[in-house]
Length: 120
Image (cartoon, rainbow, N blue to C red; front, side, top):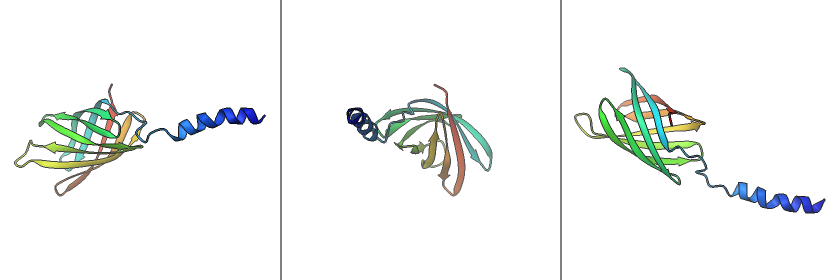
């Protein structure tokens, strides 16, 4: 009987040692950003390397650089927006839930919600 438990210990230790970035959000996402003017659709393309994420956000305002982190199920990224009068850094914070993400963003004085669903 004790031998059976000794075989389980390495498996349990391997699971506990799994990195915090065990989720991989690399790929294409349909992003929806809600603002006082309405909902704005965009395509979010993400590449993940460990906890670090990079990519692009493409919309009718052009393509913007994206960079951030994924720690556990918490996603944090910024969009380097250059489509307006002045360049702006827009932080997005949210939570990963399977193939969906939801959260909040802040653009200047505007705070709103966003959601994304993985396409591929």
